[in-house]
Image 1 (tube, helix red, strand yellow):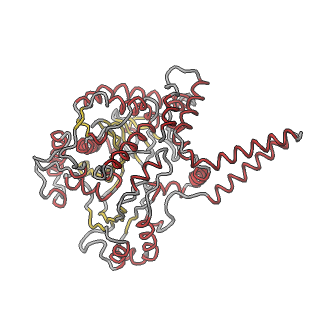
Image 2: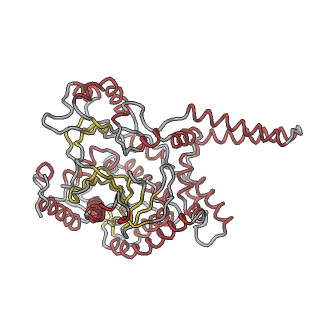
Image 3: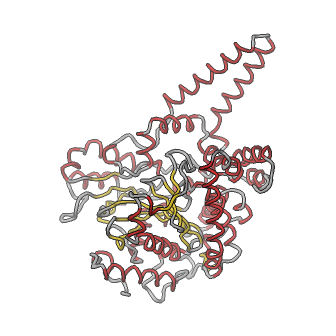
Length: 527
């Protein structure tokens, strides 16, 4: 994000006691300030040509009614062009192997979402819409829409006040790895996107200064991420095989039945190491050997397309900087075992080693630690139902009754502690009836999950914590975060004692539950 944009948004007043008119102008200014300008040329052309046509018609004394009809028809033609030629979310190959919880499953199966996505991307306003709707200024206007939005806002504010003292207490003892510095805390009081932009800018700056500072791979490279979690004894579905040599080698193993080792259980998941953004739609479920064989023509095309693809994060205001990081990644693929009994995937936001909220992909809802859930529609980042106790929903009460959530919170917090990271999203698999089986799926450093009215408050908490946390220096020089090892008593790691304590508690659960831990904990210290 350029300096001019940062300066512009810094001058937009914070959302506190401004008038309604001031709020409206500020939220427009804030969103425009962080928009990826080069992508919005279609909407600029549409607006400029429309204004020019109206001015010409007005000068020619064309009746106002005729001018309005012309403008409406002109805009409609542009929108129709966007719908017909716009870009879809994800890949159109091997659709029947796409995981049901994938973002592309929503954007391609829901007609309204598909039209909205195509239109927004055609006009280059996707990042503007994302930034606009998540700005504090927009939230302070939108909360007055109806009783549901007002109740949702009040719950988010009450929850922030409840959790803040606990989080600041944790921040005071938190060891922040120096790699995660470079966040401008004052910007965080204004916009979530600014903090994430600061994070991406900092990672890019460090990588340019020294190629060894590629710690961003702990998220941007799935294979590096999985290796970190397995090496540090976190529960993850087993990684069966990985490839980094060539697409030909990988496709050959896939065709000849060697991608999934003999004796391994089906189904398995095909993932591409260098593609982590949801819009890349790079994960496919391999049902069984017969399905792989019959689907090989499309799988071949899909695998080669994904191997050659470069990660593109065009939905975000920091797309250019993020793409420069991912351009450095080496293509690769991995086949991972399926998580048995998957009932929910909870995307947990962790700030300063404290799990704040979780988002359920299947339910489109934000779960808070006070026992409530706020549920919203797909494609809109705010709730459309009143906050309600989790225990009152038959489809979700088991999460609380069976005791899953304490385990989810602990796993997410322990992962964040081991990375010494101030803000991260940890995606966790949960199996109904087996609360001790929680496992890490993946992580995100720049989460685009809709946390509803919580966005303003998580921005403040993220920013405020930087005034309290202690910096953990990189030691020895050049050691990447993803190379750290908790089980080595001599190896450096931020928050090591707390991370080990969390891991030991998880090992104790699985041992008490007689879980099959042989594949994961061989060589790991016991509780």
